[in-house]
Length: 247
Ligand code: PXP
Image (tube, rainbow, N blue to C red; front, side, top):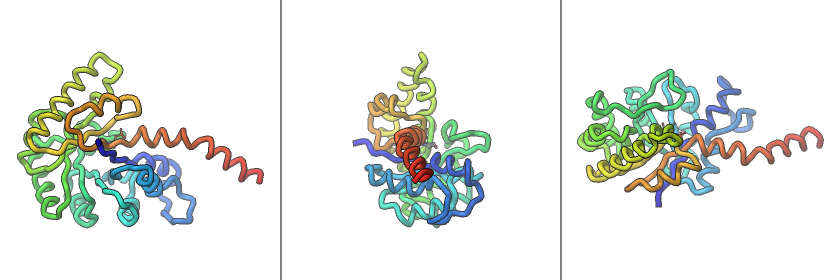
């Protein structure tokens, strides 16, 4: 069984598009609520909730993370940049796991994997701090041999292989080569003793291929689930509004 981590960031993206700067209140107008979305995902069988508190707070806010911690029964995986402020936040929150991702202000969503080789000491300090606090560290890396081997050497128990390049190449001649990189990466990571997760750009179509990767423990999927939920809920949302306009 491959586990599903549902990434709820883009639920907050929709909220921020209308309600940036509004304080959350349980009976207030602020919607959609990513925590409510997470609870529905939990009811539907999600194995974990992934949430990325970005430095610029463009989608998920700190109160979302704390509210989620209070109500979620399933695992919380906190995505974070490898910075002292975010490490301190994670040590306070104590999620089940953290996933260390690169962050740049210009990107719309995470692009490219973490450069573990290039920032070895910083990454090692993060892993050590999390290990000491019994929080699992996952490193979000490209399926690159040097990144995988060093992740294992530094003591990270998990990696999340970045599936973005493959997803972007899905309808191009490069797809097979990108899939081979992921395939070899998954084998290498497993051989190095790492638990292998994967994520980014997985959707309802390409999941048929990604599920054939060897040794995958969990897939982290966000955008496609939020998008599907928007369209599957549209009929009821319109019906309800018409009813309230003309009771
Ligand atoms: N895994 C990581 C580390 C990510 O940064 C993201 C994107 O926020 C995802 C998985 C989910 O990607 P998507 O929204 O494309 O499913």
